[in-house]
Amino acid sequence: MITIDRLAPSDRDTWEQLFRGYIDFYGRTEPDAMYERSWAAFQEDTRLHALGARLDGRLVGITHFFIHPSTSGPDLCYLQDLFTAPEARGKGVARALIEAVRVWAEEQGCCRLYWMTHETNATARRLYDQVADNRGFIRYQIELPGPR
Image 1 (cartoon, one colour):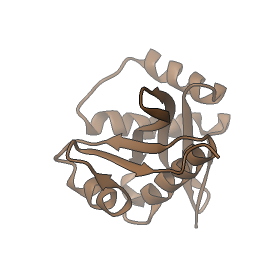
Image 2 (cartoon, one colour; image 1 turned 30 degrees about the vertical axis):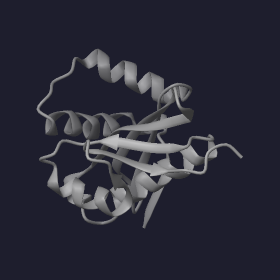
Image 3 (cartoon, helix red, strand yellow; image 1 turned 90 degrees about the vertical axis):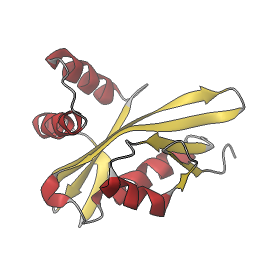
């Protein structure tokens, strides 16, 4: 069973392993200070937000996201990072994380959830093409009803 919730302080080490896996996937390296800064921001949960996916109680996926203003309408939610542990792929974890961010963004009054991925990320794009619209910029978005 997949459950989605905020990351708890006890998730710190596993979160960092997953986030490092995400950074490695894109061939980047980041200083340890970046992980510390990000974790602190996610725990504060004011400007940057994070959710974790648990499969049978074990943290196996993470997503990071934030709201930003738009010049042409209500705020937007940008899903910046999404990563699932290799052993949990194909089990609905990424789909559940995206849906949880969609619901959260809608509750915040956002009119759109969007994200980007590299054009060579074929595995992720198969899922993204099922849950969002590809607008030709390798940018995915889900239209939301906006403020109520």
